[in-house]
Amino acid sequence: MLRRITCVDHIKIDSVSFSSIFQIGDSEQIQAISRALAVQREAEIFFDNEGNFNAYSIFSEAIPFQPADAENVTFSTHNLNPVLKVRNIDIMGASSSSVVHLGNSCNIAMEARVKHIRQLLPRNNNSGEKGI
Image 1: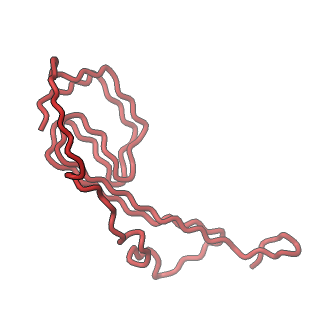
Image 2: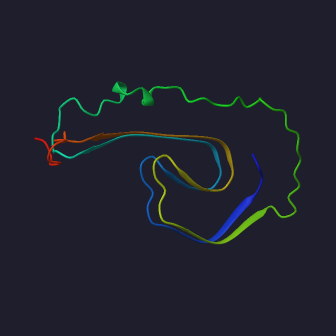
Image 3: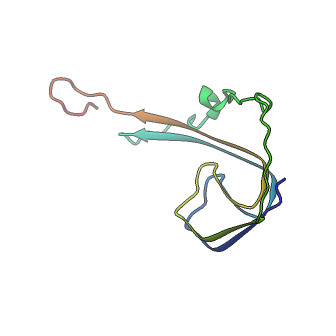
């Protein structure tokens, strides 16, 4: 892992939610997963069997990852000053499997899957009014 020190004078975060992380300090591994069903309806109708993530393939499909050894890249770095100095950080929000991280990281895996469903009432083609 890199050998650097992060120095922040002031940080303000209004909101951290839904499998998000606010991390101060070094981490070996971070893994955050967030899944959501977003249903929008014109009529207030609710069914008992709703909310089953297994019913939608978006939640079970494999995420294609590029193999780590796909390319051989050789580089070298020399840090004249091992301190990362930041005066001010102002964040409105971190949501849905995101990370605000001050420090060094080794492995980070993030995932956010959202299925949006919009259910509208049938329309009457003649009058343009809502159907029942």
